[in-house]
Image 1: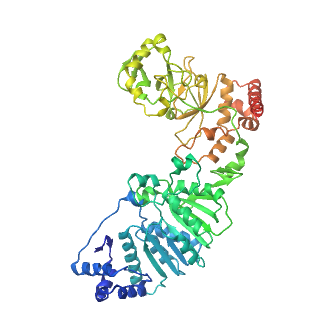
Image 2 (image 1 turned 120 degrees about the vertical axis):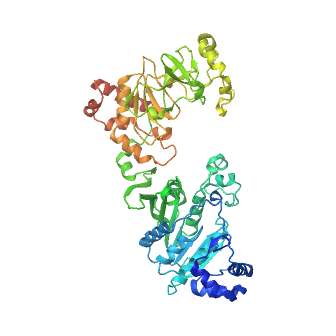
Image 3 (image 1 turned 90 degrees about the horizontal axis):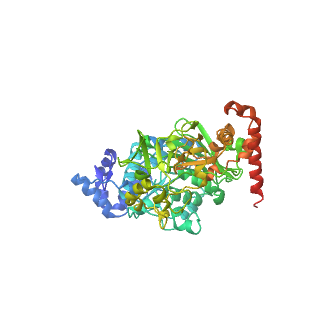
Amino acid sequence: MTYLGALVSDVALEFFSENQSDLTDFTLINEKIKKVSGINDFFANQDEATKLLNEIIEKHSIASEPDRREYGDFQTNMDLAHQVAKYSHTKNKEVEFVLEPTCGKGNFLLACISQFKNLKKVVGVEIYKPYVWATKFGILTYYLNNPNTIKPEIDIIHSNAFEFDYSNLAKSTEQFNTLIIGNPPWVTNSELGSIDSKNLPAKSNFKNHKGLDAMTGKGNFDIGEYISFTLLKCFEKHKGIFAFLIKNSVVKNLIYDQKRNQIRMSKSEKLNIDAKKEFNVSVSACLFLTHLNTEPDQTCVECDFYNRNYITNFGWYKDKFVYSVQDYDESSIIDGKSIFVWRSGVKHDCSKVMELDQINGHFKNALGEEVILEKDLTYGLLKSSDLKYDRTNSFRKLTIITQQKIGQDTTYIQNKFPLTYEYLNSHKAFFDKRKSSIYKDKPRFSIFGIGKYSFATYKVAISGLYKSTHFTLVIPKDCKPIMLDDTCYFIGFDDLKTAEIAHYLANSELVQKFLKSIIFSDSKRSINKDTLMRIDFEEAFLAADFEKAKEKIEDLEIHHWETFGKLVNERVAEQMTLF
């Protein structure tokens, strides 16, 4: 049967049926429950006890489930909970106090009670009342089935994790060897706010952002990160461990902020789990385990949760936040400032009109219309998905380029290219619907991500959408440069051999190792301008070998190589004079 939404096991039901008379006085039934299970204050008042008595008599049941978004609710299955508790036990067998701040149905608490034999105190906090009952009944059932097991003092508290007084709990339990365990909500504060959830922390700038960052996007944070940070700070003086199932991005943020926060934690581990298998959600998540009350370090070992295979060691190293300490150590000479400025491609936000297919010599847009245009303003276009080859001059799409620099007057099109103007003007409604504020008060048919660099004959390009760090050399088609869209980044050259050498260096083992050492593959846009601008081409050139380069670059002569060397050296010297 169920009681206030919580499943009551047969053995627990039998216990209450045998003690029906005591349910008429909740203090008496609470004493009996305390004796058999260690749970304090099972019933908070007589009404709760009477409700159970009536349901036993009437065999009445009520069941309900919460909105998963409201509570960030992904209940941990018992098998995974036991695996986490077992792994935590290998790190600290002497745990005396267990805290779970969002205990849900209590699977972690049950796993810990069965795993740790020196427990003296257990505390679970849960906002959703049916889960509070589920946890209480689950623990009671465990002890009814295992009557000879040592019973710690247990408190299952109905409270919001954001309002619970962890500071006082930390002070009162400081003498205990501690395990903080759980699976906090996998949602952000803005997601909860969007559904008008009351399950939110009080407004605070807990990451100490300044100015606009505190008021805008950077003020958004993950609820699991907020809870993790709060508990790590409150319990940093406890001897013990912290073991949370959280999103990968939260672990990255905790380790990143450790440089500033200096929370007393170390020997951190990130053990990747299969969230699709465990929770049926497509989220990159892990078990994050770290040791409390230790000299702070600022790195974290990443491995697979199921087979413990090592992946990397990431964190702060040589004053840089890196994905692989080892790879960065071997390639950090490349970490500097690119002498070539990386640019993103063309942005127009009007693909149905601006992007064209060429079929049998005719243009066709995404609306299915055949279009007659002058060819002067049409250029081949490559997107991220096209940058899979070592070099290319082929393209699937073309795009109309209306400007040579941002803000350029576009009235010239009407006189010089009347067919193109007629086509664009007949679709002006599509341009007017563009939502981005960057087009406000700009010339008609404006585009962005355009400049002299866009018309460079040769380009060394990389996708900003995919995880690959491979660079493609883009060469012109029919003496006309090829454009890239705004999901790509590139550097441009007007000399083929200079472009080929830059392309060779970008794909060299040293540069590739460097990029892989600083790029976090689970980031949404792991490859961006800031990352690429860290490639020091002068150092890459000095570390490269001409003879090996000749094997990759056709007709490469020593004077080409030396000219490139002078170029990067002069560019560096030029930059130095600016400071």
